[in-house]
Amino acid sequence: MRNKLFAANSNGLFVVVLGSDGTIKRMLIQNLQRELRGTFKDIVYFHFMPRLLRRGGEGKPVTNPHGKPPRSCFLSILKLIYYWLDFNLGYLFKVRPALKKSALVLFDRYFDDLLIDPKRYRYGGPMALASLLQRFTPRPSMWLLLDVPEEVIFQRKQEVSLREINRQRKTYRQLAFELPNAVLLDATLSVAETTAQAQDAILSYLKAHASTHQRFGFGKLERNALEYLDLSLGAKSEQDGQPFYYLGLPNGRGFLLPATTPKIAAAGLTIYTPQKKRTKLTKSFLKSCIYLGIANLILPRYHLNITALYKELQNVFKKDNISLSVSLGFFGPHRKPVIMVMDERGNALGYVKVGWNEPSRRLVENEVHAIQELAKFKTPKLILPQIAAFRPSGKWYLLCTYPQIIQSGEMLSQDDISIYVSVLCSLAKAQTMSCSFINSEYWQTIYQRLEILLKGDLVPLYQKTTIMRMVSCLERNLSTTILPWVWKLGDFTIWNTGLDRNNGRVSVIDLEYARPNWLMGWDVFHFLNSIIAKRKEVDDQQTLLQQFFSEIGVTLDAQYFHLGYLLDLMTEWYMTWYESGEYPNSYSFREFNRLANQANKVMDRLSCL
Figure 1: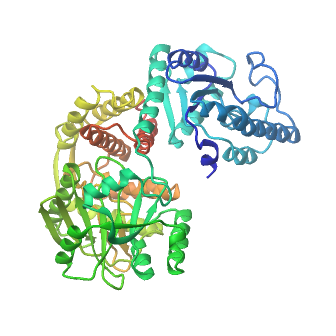
Figure 2 (figure 1 turned 135 degrees about the vertical axis):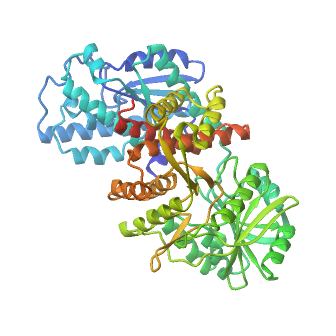
Figure 3 (figure 1 turned 30 degrees about the vertical axis):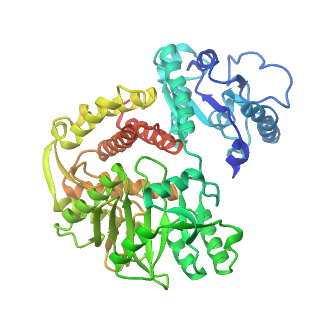
């Protein structure tokens, strides 16, 4: 809500440039002002803060940033509050109006800089207070963080010690790794090359937001969604059609809930599986409204004719009186509906994935093949989906599976996570083949993708730089190493799996991206990432990785495989967009940026930069 307050209705772009003194920030900003003049209606520049409460210009250049002692605690707090008010009021009265006029707003430094280098601002107060106020400061659309080795910075400017420059650089890099909309730029390149990468990052951001389909508002079913329903399900809006409530989410996901009775509608809400506390509360609230009979006040009601699909599913599950609850899926090339089929009491009879176009049909076919192949291995602790029917005929490829009865695995303890890792170990040991890294199917596939991706303009320049460093790091350290290659389940996450704690078994419900003879540890990293996305950390992660790789008999640093996982995920997703002929939407742009930042962090640990 905080970010929505400051970003709503903004047509321009809000960019902050950060970096230590000596990282060509000013030169970069001047170049961006010149190069992007025709892209935006105006370009507005601020140094550190909007200066709504402070008259005059920027003042004299700072030549000795740590020359003066910190202010007293009391004065520091007063100054901090003054800064915070200027950032917030300045945003409302100077920055936001510029954004509404489609301007590019550039900041050289920002409030966060005070947390990284408090001595520069003579801040001697509690850092906890500064961190708290930072959370309630307007956040930019994009961060550009300039990275230069400390020795190079020290050669350019000797204003602070080499040790302090090293500390600042590590802190700036850590900030880049943590922010999903941060771009880490290599400022050891020439000014022209650095400018080109920064300009490309900004233009890529604009393209991504321009290509994003109109999002579903909370409740409103947009025209593009109705067209998608017609294409994917054959559903047409008709007065005598079946009644559905529509639940639309801000992230673009949408759900159709059967509106025949409150009991069936509430049961249909099961298909919506929120992961965060706030969204779980929202789901509980909606369920209460449905039972109270006031759902019409919150969720719009539509009548859709889906007779053909309805009859097909009646035949599959051998039941006349069924109800359908539909997840419309995420925006993207592989978007497909998933249907929960229920009986007259709201009990789930099964789930149906609908392949309706070429990309989604390939995924459905691959899942069927993966289930059949994985069932051949003796892995009793891994529970695979049970296929009720596979109908690859006519317009639809329907994969129907029975519900899996398991205990919830949402709140996982460290022992629970160990069970997941142990199950993946048993799968890895059940089927392996060995060959050198460079001759593996995995590495050949990576190179085939790169031959396409590096030639076009789909991948931003700064991410191409990161990808090539990933390739170089892996080739330099793993090239001729003989490794075992195992099954990759593909989407083994906390929300796509379930845990039977009593029997130490794990069920998986999504195998669309599964494939054999792939990189070791892929599913482990993917699973741990899904936990981190939910609760920000995994206790003793290194021990879990060591448990996995030692059981397979691999002694190499697990971070090399983590880097290989990120490279595969990043290039596979880009190829999906390439094959669709579309440009990645804003959600995918953030995800690609997050993966690039993670890769830079891993390469830091491996000293590959």
